View 1 (cartoon, one colour):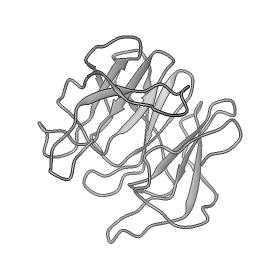
View 2: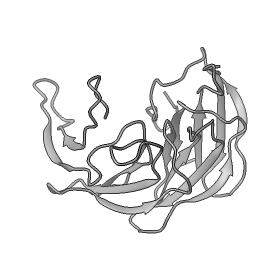
View 3: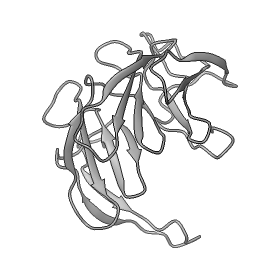
Length: 200
């Protein structure tokens, strides 16, 4: 995270999801790069992942991929690199891979990167968005085999859009424009909430 005071936060914290009230967070570990902001994220049943963004050691955009374990207190490991450094990317996941879509470096990106979870293999550029955008929102349809990219902005001025784009997880093909959001938007979330049937 990035605070108003200009400090990068590197803590990995967790909280129990079963409790309805009185929830507090506990420190799970630290990111090895000392914190990051405006990057993408991913997950597997055992690990969390961070992708790109900005960090204290890099005034530009970083291509770092880090992973941390859910099971124990431990700092993250730098596992691999993205195809290129970007921030304000969206993210989506299927059972075996994490995907990073769009972003900024400098200028808007139309890249869709694919990273194989649990490996030190660098991510690869597997496709392109219909529209180059940053500050986009991502959703996953694991059973259906699709990732979604919603809204976003760019090139400056912000130029927010309402486009919903979809791409197949299994193939290296461009995304397609399948609909529109109720309103234009950017920066709301790098990752939306996904149920079994809908993206939110």
